[in-house]
Amino acid sequence: MPFGQRAIVNAQSRTLAKLVRQMKEGCKKDEEAKESTLCGLNPCLKCLQPDILYHLGLNTETTDFPKVFGDVRFVCMGGTPGRMENFAYYVMQEIGLKINAATKLRNISEAGQRFSLFKVGPVLCASHGMGCPSISILLHELIKMMYHAKCKDPVFIRIGTSGGIGVEPGTVIISSEAIDGRLNPAHEILVHGASVQHASQLDESLADEIKMCHDPCKDSYEAVIGRTLCAHDFYEGQSRLDGAFCEYTPEMKKSYLETLQSQQVKNIEMESLAFAALTSRANIRGAVVCVAILNRLNGDQIKTSHDVLSKWEKRPQELVARYIRKVLYHNDDDDESEQPEDEAEAGAGGAGDTQKAPAEEAE
Image: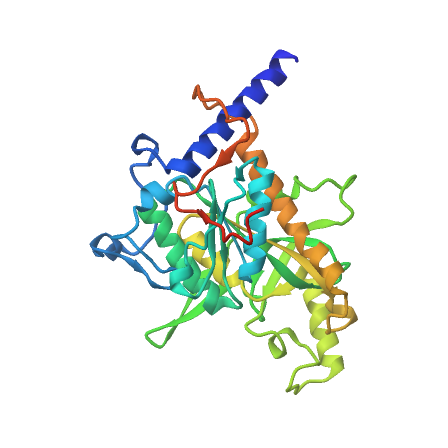
């Protein structure tokens, strides 16, 4: 093996060994950052003893956040608990980690009964529900988690589905900017009855890095970067004609969607405004990666078969997993002397991300 290639393999092996150990034991004290790299947060957080992350079922009194979550580098989120549990197992495989057959990934936020939360080494996978109000609750508590865990430069990525604007169904859209129905790049909230707007900025370089993980020669789909319109409901807010109420004409709908297309809008979904605004306020690099499950210029209802939709939903997951693997293993200069275990397995316990599987599920 050439020297350069051997060096890369050795670096990857050291990184993998470190990930395995952290899954088993959590972060060592000397690996914990002294302070979080997040900024602009609530100054009262330091006074909350404990700080209760109510919707995640966690608090700083009963959970050692730096030990359990201090190694988190990527926070990935999607709509449903099932999708994110599947992604957790998928990304675990893609970054070279395993758990033995007698364990399964544990839903860390099960006590909260609102969201799902799975931890795979440096990757946290969460479900965010539907719409800006739901994802904003999750983001507030995840951002506080990163702060208490003293995480360094975490990357947040939303993975999901969307309605395409002038793109082929199955196309993956990486958002360059999130805008509202007025084409305004800001997330509006009411505070004390007054309108407050926060810029819905996304990290352009992160979008480019994820786009570079797409291989046009091997992947059977397109990946594009474009603007994303975030609507506050599924029907009227997205100019659909198939809702229970509709007070506009097909011609009005057509004109509006064509206006969006002329403004480089590639898709419509329901979470990107809150995601972009909250991550940028905290100085977190954020990206939104969604697959288009239909072209809204050609209709409103989703008639594609479940099997095809399932394949399309995996496309954003594939790109994001490639990006994570590339960041973890590309030109890693970690000088630890540890070597990976033969099977690179992580046992139960440790960072609190696994639990013993029921007998009927363990094979």
